Length: 70
Image (cartoon, rainbow, N blue to C red; front, side):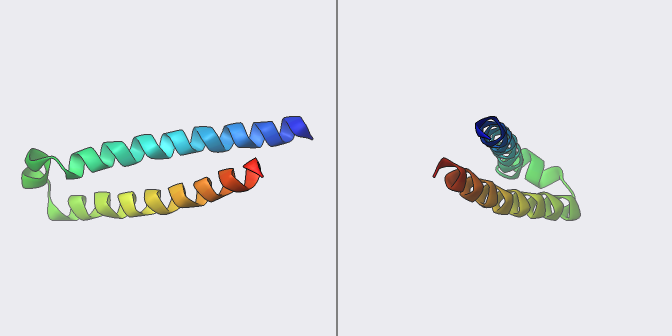
């Protein structure tokens, strides 16, 4: 049972790392004046939507990690 819990926690940790990497990447794009001035508005909106979804997913995974620590 302990191995299963450790495996789940490792998986959640890896998922959190990937989410944080993606959040960082998209945030950098959206904070880049060159990108913002050249990118079509629809693409910028799509990136903002992705960022919002990633932040929601981050909160969910963070809650799962907290629950797994208890």
